Length: 92
Image (cartoon, rainbow, N blue to C red; front, side, top):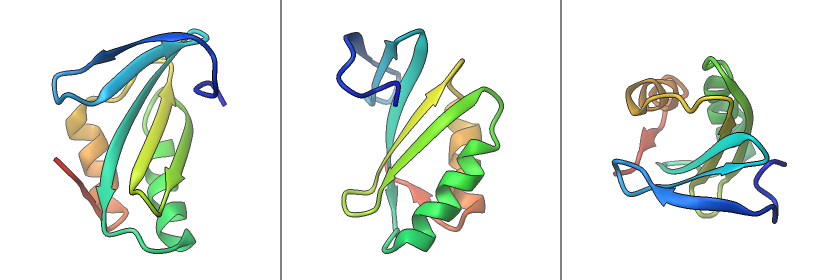
């Protein structure tokens, strides 16, 4: 995973979410409301993975955190739309 323990400079984006550039890949995390099981995680992962440039999606159902690695991070509107298509809401 590009966001394991590799060094990267974290910086807040416009919504105050943590973003970083790690091993040449942009990484962002967002919170998603309403996920309760692995099926939820699979649906969210599949929709976000379809966005241009996304290389990896890690979903933690328990916390609601979704981490996205991408060559260029998708904008908030595209990310929100993908999460809504999966049937969930981006928190915040």
